[in-house]
Image (cartoon, rainbow, N blue to C red):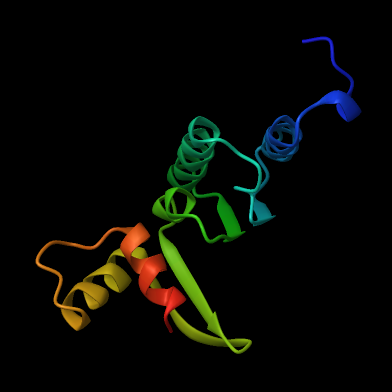
Length: 119
């Protein structure tokens, strides 16, 4: 690709920023809604990269509203009115949601985010 940065699409710019940030394998990375402007395949790739970081004992702090990105998280911190409402492993939160809302099967992160919109 022979494009300069200013000629890249928003999604291409976002992928480049993520790749540059992760290329040095930092111990800690903080991402604010990294899913912005990404297409489905790029979201899946991002989720896989975050999961890989988890297996390498590297820390990723991510603010997200996307279920694909959330699926790659091991621990989840929910804020409500600027205060910590919950900080638990994702699986624990999904089990609580299943019990509270009478899900017959384990809810997905998409279900979880849909419920949170109403809270």
